[in-house]
Image (tube, rainbow, N blue to C red):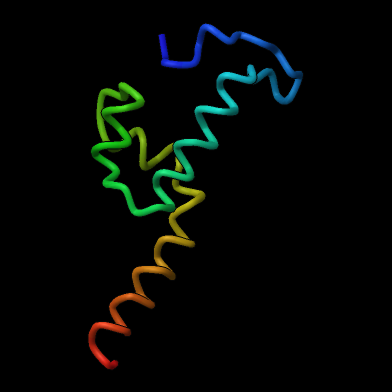
Length: 77
């Protein structure tokens, strides 16, 4: 049982509940905010960080661009 499972309101989008949508959105936002994937994984109660990263890999391209920009700034500015 996840932290938002008690909401249980079906909204009809691919069979996801509102709780699942909120959980998914919050997770993506935490990853985009550069919170450690291990911390996010623990909050989701995933058995491994691999599951978290596999599930939310769609946010990684944005994170890769941010990492490249940050490294460039540290090295060349």
